[in-house]
Length: 205
Ligand code: GRF
Figure 1 (cartoon, rainbow, N blue to C red):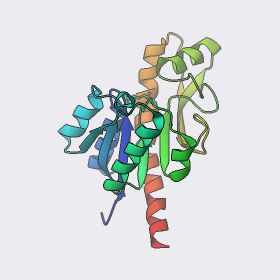
Figure 2: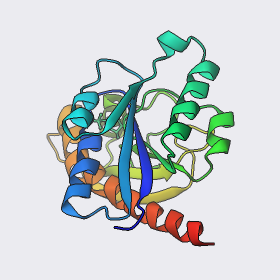
Figure 3: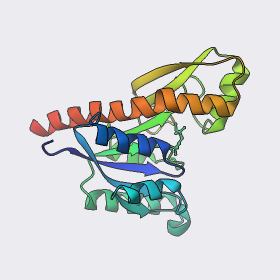
């Protein structure tokens, strides 16, 4: 494909969503984007291995090393610029980005969240906590959301959502797994393709 959009995926953990993006690029679901870089906030993230296995450049930028959020973000920006990144994908990235950062990349950062926003989102809703809250509330349907990232946690414009049924015997763990398999791993690659097409259109303007 001609001149695909350059994507950086920001991770902190296992990277199953990163894997889904890599697989979607290979299978042709993603045609208009190329993963050029994976940045991890955690040097031990398994996501880094997935990137390396697929010949994708990796960088570790941990807050420990750069101490303040400001320094950390300045370092991230430097690297994003070095790689000519046009779209930033947060896939299990555990650091909150400042308003300064999100403004700089307005409509150029997307995130995957494991619930149907505006339910079970915002500060403190991450990982299994999201699914615990959904089960506690007794919702019959949950799902995942891809949204643009702004200064409000999980508050940016919604790009895509997919619903998943809650089953009677679900535990937070079984629900988390099903939401990933049936929703997250599908809509994240689809949203990347959608936004990349839009970025390519804008390039032509
Ligand atoms: C996913 O549940 C995602 O929705 C959330 O963090 C988790 C990351 O998992 N933002 P993985 O690292 O992609 O396996």
